[in-house]
Image 1: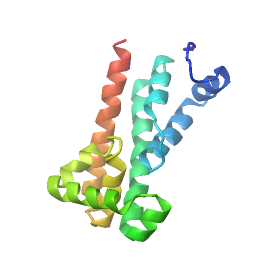
Image 2 (image 1 turned 90 degrees about the vertical axis):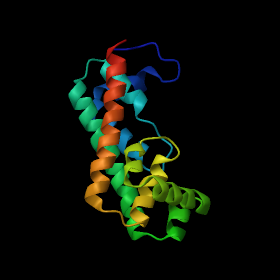
Image 3 (image 1 turned 90 degrees about the horizontal axis):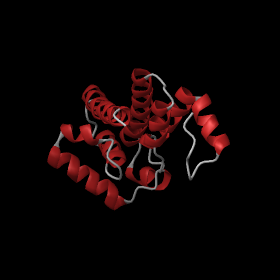
Length: 157
């Protein structure tokens, strides 16, 4: 097991690695919602502890895409006031996400994994009632490619 971590206790590290796949799914889901959370550290930790690369990438992607679907659903079924109160998205963030989405089109969803702009993009896709099949394909592609790149980077260490 990888030890030498400065910011995480040994018991927390053990918890992450003993319940790796389920913890990764939850972390990936939370990272794709408006909550400030990151799954890359845990994904890297599992890979460094010899978890199966394909499983890690698939589970991380599934959790992350499910979080994006929740954002899409909130945008689709919610209104801007609800999004501002529940998700704490400012009117300005929603406006910029819609503007960016309209400017770059559907393919901007391939960048739903990018910090700061990704989550509002998935909410904007719902607000704009973007076709769910296209949303799912593009978001899944972008998020999966990100995890593949991270996995390849970790394996090259």
